[in-house]
Length: 521
View 1 (cartoon, rainbow, N blue to C red):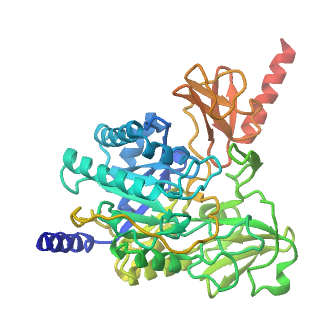
View 2 (view 1 turned 45 degrees about the vertical axis):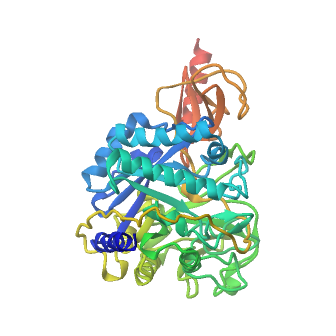
View 3 (view 1 turned 30 degrees about the horizontal axis):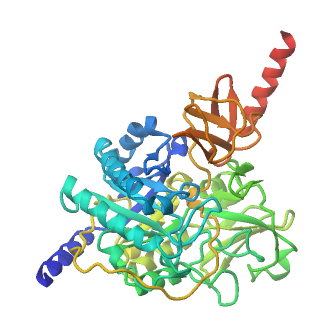
C-alpha cells in the first residue's frame, strides 16, 4: 500500500506541475456582466450557486442559462464545476448530513447533475461546518465536521465509480481557519485532503463594518493588536499546520473592496488604517443597492466596490492613483491599498494589481496549487487576473494559456476522524455570496404573505416588497418558502403576473408608467 500511495502522490506532483490553478467563481446572476471576461485566462470555473433543500436535492435557479454558461467556460478551455451552498445557501447542510435519506439524495443529485450537464465536478461552499455563519443556518458543533468528511468520502467513491478514478473534481470553499469541531478549529483536516482536490481559502471579508474600527478587507498579513487577527498568510499557516497539503490549497483573492464610514477625519493619521468607524454601510458602486437580509431581518447596502467600478466610475485614475477628493494610501504590513474621502469620511479597502501579485507570488512560494478569484465579472480589462496569474513567475501573466490540472489524491486507506484546538472570533458575512441569483425573467409571481420556512401551495416566486424597494424574494419549492435575494444592486419587481430582478431606476420608472396608465383608464 505504501508503494501505491507513493506512486499516486508522484503522479499528483507531475499533474500539478503542469501549471497553477487559476480558479474563478462565476455568479450565474451576473451572466449579463461577463462580456469582458477572458475565460482563457482561467483553468477552472465554479458556477454559483446550487442551493441545497431540506430533502437533499438542490436548486440551481439559472438552469435555463447553464448551456450558455458552459459554452463560455468550456469554450475558453476551463473546467466547469457547480458550486453548491454559499452564504445564503448553507441553511440545511447540517440537517441533511444527519438524515440518511436526505444525505443519499444529495449524493445522487450531485452525481446525476454532473453527468446530465457535462460538468467537470462539484464545489461545496458550506459556510460553515461546525459554526453558524448566516443566522438562518442550522449547525452541529460536534457532528458537522465528521459528517462532512463522510459525505465527501462517499461522493468521491460515487464519482470514481461513475466516471473513473480522478476524472471528476471535488473542491471546497473554506474560511481562513480549518473546519470547526466542538466550537474550535480542528488541528487535523488531513483526511479531507485524501478525497478533495482543492480547498479554496476565502481570505477576504476579514474586516468590515461589523468591526469597531476600519481595517483591510483582505490583508496579506495582519498587524498584531489591530483588526481581526486573520490574513492570507495566517490562513495558509493554519490549513497546512492542520495537515492539508499545500499543493491542494488555493489562495482566495477578492476582486472588490469594502467601504465603511469613519467616525472622524482619517487624514489626521493617514499612516493608520485602523480608526473608529460607524456601524453603518454606505452605498457602494453603481451595482450596489439596499437589499433585504431575510435572516437578519434588516435592509442595507453592501458597500462593496468592484475593481471594474473603481476603475470605471472615476475613483481611481489609474491602477495606483486616486481622483480627488479621494486619498490613496498603501499599508506596508497588510500589503494592501486603501482610500479615504475626507468629504464623506468613507474608508475603502480593496485590492489592486500590486497587492494581488504579492499574494499570488507568495502562494507560489509556499507551494500552493494556485489562486481563486471572487469573482470573475469584477475585473477591469483583465488587470487583476493577469496579476493573479503571475504566481511567482510560474504562471502565465503574459497571456499564454495554462493547462487545467486535476490533483490525484492518495488512497482512501486509514482515513481517520479529526480533533480540535483553539477558539476564534465569529466569522463575518462572506462576500462569496453577496447577492444571490435572481429568478428567470418569466418567473411566475404569487400573491399573499410570505414567511420563511412556512408552507406554500404553488410553484413560483414572490417579491417580498411588490413595490420594488428591495432585493428580497421567496421561492416556493417543495411546499415551503425559501428566502432568496436578487443580485447586488438590483431589486425584485413584480410586472403583471411575473417577477424580475431589475435596476431600482427601472422599477421606479415602471411604477410611474403604471400609475399614468391607471389614471388614464
